[in-house]
Image (tube, rainbow, N blue to C red; front, side, top):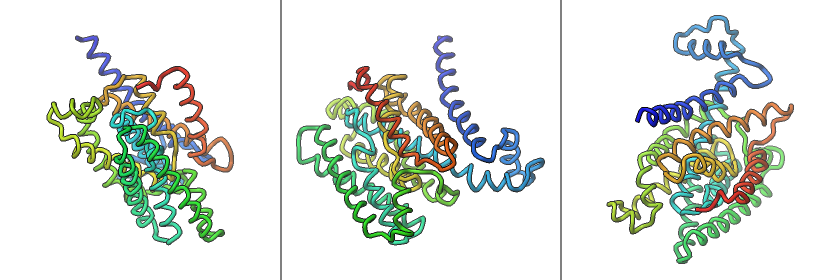
Amino acid sequence: MSRNFCRRFLFIAVLFLLPLIFILVSMMMGSYHTTPGEIFRIILGKMTGETAGVDEKTVNLFWTIRFPRVMAACLAGAGLSLSGAVFQSMFKNPLASPYTLGVSNGAGFGAALGIVLSLGTIGVQGMSACFGLVSIGVTFLLASRSKSGSTTLILAGMLVSALFSSLVALLKFMADPFEKLPQIVFWLMGSFSGSSQEKVLYILPVYIAAFVLIWLYRWKINVMSMGDQEAASYGVNVKLDRIVVILSASVLTSMVVSISGIISWVGIVVPHLARMIVGPDFRKICPVSVSLGICYLLMIDGFCRTVSTAEIPIGVVTGIIGAPLFMYFIMKKKVDW
């Protein structure tokens, strides 16, 4: 009993400490190096009103650039990984993710439309959330016409993704080539360079609400992954609970896309890594996916902003890493459901 308790305690400690270590390292990285002691004094100074031993330039750099960027990366990593885990568990399909089901491209079209119409930060994020929900709604509408199950759902998601990709291409053609087009192109490749406290705070209430809903539904998602009849025998309202969970995951993805752009493969690769570590139990997959997702995106973001003088879009690097990694999972037969 004591050995199992120690293992569980150690596992939980690693889940919490690993992201904290990555957050600290990420806050130190950059062309302007910051020490752990300076970071501690800056955060302490925010509460006390005094930042002894830290110059004003470092304090401003931390609160205007480093802190919002790291927080945005944490929200994106946790949100995309958790959404991917939800979709894969709900549909019992290893390819299900926010990207393959059309949510990311739908949210991307909404944000691009907001940029073209000059709607501002709130408008862009609102349009992103709306079209993310529209895309998953259309995907389900198409999939409901067939009885082929998850295969039809993936195909419907691919169709919806292709549709919104074409609409984004149309917006790029119509956009102002000197002002709007560069914003759309850079944004669609994914980046945290434009992160700010305002952008993070705008999405935080809705993000937290969707995140908490999924967290509270962990055991129901576990039961629903066994099948509708099995879930109903446990007293689960399958139709209602499925709608709540899928909408929550879609909103979570839309909120992430609205601040970071489209970041592919995170929602596919990270849940598989979590499943390889803790097995198919969603109650365990949920926290592990969140922890690994935060570490994964912080690591890649650190690489993107330090490997060269010009920052590499993070969506490009996640695709370069994620696709071969998933190929490796397939060859090692790690994606069987």
